[in-house]
Image (cartoon, rainbow, N blue to C red; front, side, top):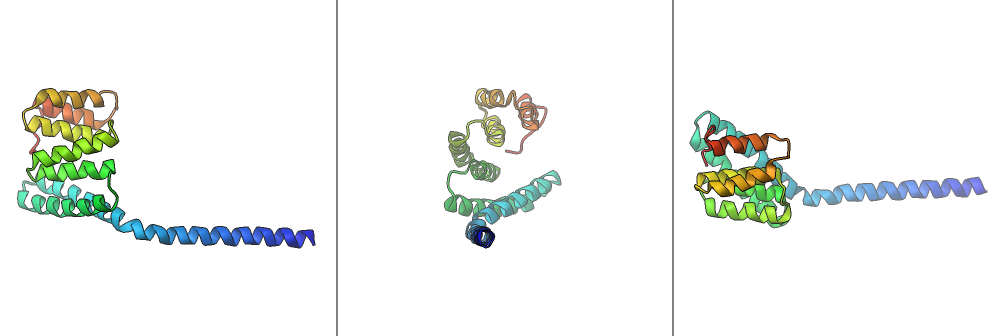
Length: 165
């Protein structure tokens, strides 16, 4: 009898856990549109960067515009995500709106002050808007990250690499 009860308890626990796992995975699908929009936007940004390297500015701009729309949707659904704000700042900057791009970056930094991407891209924005001292402050934040972003920003500041925005 004890063995039967023990088996029954173990079975119930297993069924309960299986049901919980199944319901949580279907629950995550309701949030996947936000994640999906973000992931689609990142793919568009990577594609846009490749178009820029090939001097296909019109195609790059179209991808940045599409990515920006997806990121706005993602941000509306899940606000205050530093990664989303990073790419919102990036696409906005790439589309020539430095003021709003800076706002997105600063909002992201208020959430995650040491965000590597935001610090690099905000530094590039500062170089593009001729605020080198502020760009150097962003470089200082990246100083010990042991990351490519430090070298990328350093090259932009020193004029060894140009940033199209």
